[in-house]
Image 1: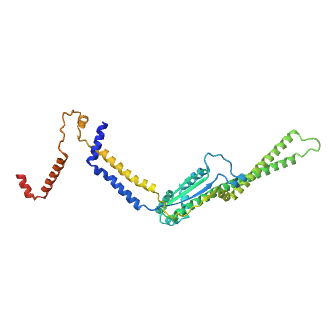
Image 2: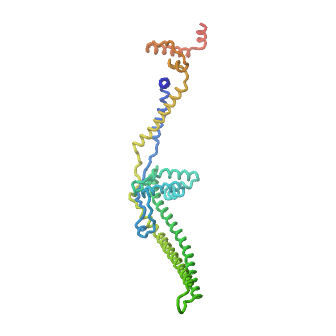
Image 3: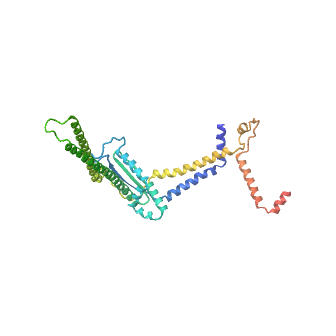
Length: 356
C-alpha cells in the first residue's frame, strides 16, 4: 500500500510539476517584495542594576527580610512585564514620548498605539542583578524615548507603591495609637479610683483581696503602656519609611548602561534569511499539500498495481509502449500541427473535409 501511495504522489507531481512549483515561486516573490518593502527597525536598550534591598532600608530595618527563590532581576522582570500588560502603565510610558500626539486621534488610534508600544518593548533578566530593557521601533528617537520612559516610570511606580504602603501603615498605626492611648488613660484612672476608695492602711498590709485587685489594675496599665509604646514605635517606622521611599527605590535601581539614541537601523542578515526562508517553506508546504491532495483525490487507474489493489482483479497482460522517444515527440508534434491547421481553415472547407 505504501508503494502505491509513493507511485501516485510521484505521478501526480510529474504530471503537473510546473503547476506545483508555482506556490514556491509565488512565495519566493513575496519574500523578495517583503525584503524590499520592509521598514527599517531601530533598537535602543538599557541595563539597570537591581537589588532586593537598599543599604538605607537594611540599616533602618524597615523592609522585612524574606527569603525568595528567584533572583532580583527575575523578580523585577516579571514585575515590569505585568505592568506592561496594563493600559495605565503603557499610557504613562507613552506620555513621555513623541507618540503622545497619536493619543488625540480617537479611541482606535489610542488602542493601536498602546498595542504597538506594548509589542515593541521587551524585558528580560541579564544575570542575577541586571535587568535589560529593549525597544524596537521604526523611529530612532521614539525608540530612545520609550526605553528611558519605561525605566523612569517603573521607578516612579515603585516609589508611588511603597509610599502608598507607608501612608496606609501610618494611618493604621495612628488609629491604633488613639485606641491604646484611651485604654492607658482608662487603666490609670481605674488605679487612681481604686486607691481613692481603698487607701493604704496606716498599720499593717492591705488585705489579700485588695492587693490582688491592685495588681490586676497595675498589670492592665503595663499592658496598655506596652501596646501604646509599640504602636508609637511602628508609627515612627512608617513615617521613616515614607520619608526614605524615594531614596530607597533609587538605591535599589542603578542605571549601568544608559540608553543611547540608535543612529543606524538594526539589520541582521540572519533574521533576513530566516524571514525569507519562512515564505519559501510556506510555498513548499502548499506544493506538498497540492501534490498529496491530488494523489488522494485521483481515483483513476494509472498503474497495473492499481488494478490489483483497487479492483481486486488479476493483471493478465500489459502492452508496453515501445515507441521510441523521438517518434513519440514527432507524432505529438504532427497531431498538434493538424489541430492548429484545422483551427485556421474556414468553416466551408471543414464541412467539405468532413463530408469527404
